[in-house]
Amino acid sequence: MALGRGGTLLPPRFVCPDVSETNREGKRTARERMAEERERQKARDKRRRVLLVSATVVAVLALAAVVGLLAANSGDDKKKDTSGPVVAPKGASGDGGLAIPLGKDGAKSKLTVWEDFRCPACKQFEDMYRSTINELTTQGKLKVEYHLATLIDGNMGGSGSLRAANAAACAQDAGKFAPYHDELFKNQPPEPDDAFGNNDKLLDLAGKVDGLVTDTFKKCVNDGGHDAWVGKSNEAFQKAKLRGTPTVLLDGKDIFADQKNPLTPQKLKAQVEKADQ
Image (tube, rainbow, N blue to C red):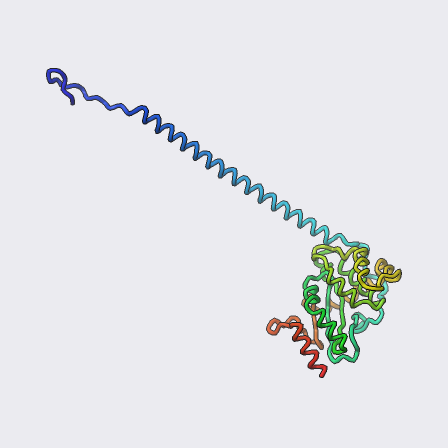
């Protein structure tokens, strides 16, 4: 209490708040609220951008999958019929004449190779072992029997495995199987891409092999002269219940699937040279 005149007591005076301070505090609080709202808006915008980008990526991947599926089925379906008379290529050997031989008959070692021209693992095998196999066959130490399968056509759709195998058999008729076989694997398209389903592509690659492209060869490729033979070869692959392509047997033993003792070009060469002594 405060004393008035004569010592009388005055009623208590309530202290009023500092209005200017209150205004400053109110303005500061408003600024903070606006800043916080701006940050929240930025966060919302960022989330929307992330969702938009994610949706776009999903759409692109979905489109790529569709394109890949269409590519896998873009081969000439009319050429997928393997019925009709079985015409083996010249010099075919083995059971039913379903193997294409390479090398000398007198070689002490025989390599049996099951391949599909669309098979990526087959390309890896060829890229790694091609020079070693060619060296050993040229030296007369190794004979190779190639069996052709159409596994990827069955898995991915399309007709590239069949078309390429038929073209390779046509090349065998011309005595050019080995170099054409190598060109096909060197120029193998991605697995979903059925580029080998186009005969024009196969004929273009044949142009890389001296003397292969003739009217006879082109007719054999375009007419599917060995389609039924390829079909029989693939049937033999299925009946044999092999693990897949490539399957590589050295004198009947599956040497490519041994994970405990993985095959290398050096090991293959050593085994063949040992048998040749």
